[in-house]
Image (cartoon, rainbow, N blue to C red; front, side, top):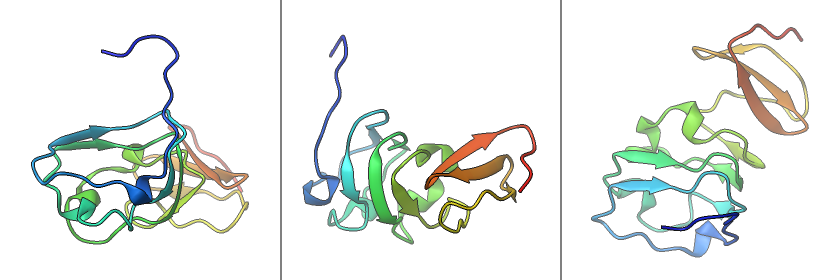
Length: 118
């Protein structure tokens, strides 16, 4: 087990994932790249998945298991978009309801249980 201030920095686009992988938790790192480029990632039968608080960009792949995880698995990435994340427009602050309230600040999506007004 890793201890202390450990943070990974790599391009997830160039990663390969084995088909028997059932859990992938990479939150709070400095991972960059796109989730659509790792071949086969959307087809891995993941039971748990979290890439929040990284530097990922691009569209979340449609179909497969990646669509079965909620917005909290994808929060606070540089420019990650697509379902299950709500639509957002640049740096505008707007009220979006997806079971919680979302607001966009400087390109990052943040969630709160309190209402935020545009």
